[in-house]
Length: 373
Picture 1 (cartoon, rainbow, N blue to C red):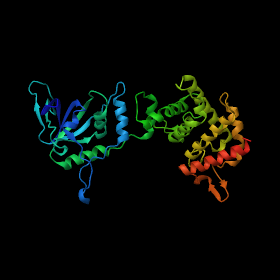
Picture 2: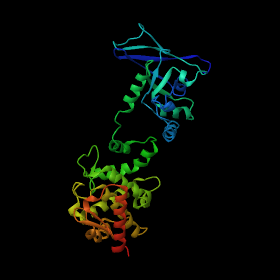
Picture 3: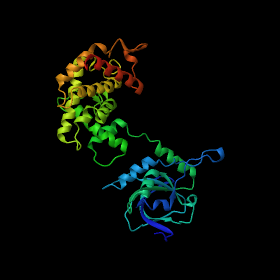
Picture 4: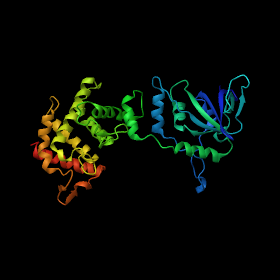
């Protein structure tokens, strides 16, 4: 294709409104850089902003590239390209059936490797990272869907860029709830959360789970405990705590059942020891708050570690180990005594890294002093 001066692709022309026409087609993603470039944001000589695309995010591109090189990848969302008037559409009428807003035909796009990026007929409005990943991927080709429009007005290109990229993203809570049902390679941040999200789902839905229906998700809006608090507690334990000890390398069914049982039994014991603070809104109980959930998770790990390398702790063992902490915790009233000159009212604790660490250190110190002697 290097010697060709143009590429012709089957396309559908869609008229959305007066003067607003779109063209939809498919093409090898590795070819797109030959006719389309990126207009990156810049301020020449300290003047006004020119261009509209952001610089490439290398880590994100690398994750997409890895996915493209995996087995059976699929990227269904189209990239968006703005063409100038050198690109032309020729209708296939009257040979193809159409509607009053569509025409089928051929889109002709000029190719010229000698031209600079600024002279190319296309500008990438959306899909910069995907196309960069496909460009670098070790695959022969990767067809992509493209939605394009023809305009010589940079302001219109910028307008579409803003509209496309200002769309509200999916809520993280919804993404986390969807994770357990996925198997494909995902970006690393989501990949790390898939298994904790799976455990969360089991804890929130299993009959007999002490947390059943208590974790707030998009499909369980009445839950009192934020899903992100449970996820953080599970991630910490999976990293180097109780769940890490009992998780098999292949996350077998047996190890999953054991991990679900451990967490459920721990929180069943916690709900019994701290019964007056259980099942209250986080504003009325710091036990149900992110600070309490994450901090007590470290106590669960400490109890498991204290009981040594044997079978997982039972609910009664968790109960016996938590009982001494009852009188030194102030989940719903009073003051936490964190040390000389460090006193905090019960509801002053916030779900911040600093406060979670402060409470975690206090609970672990109390546990070691009162129980682990």
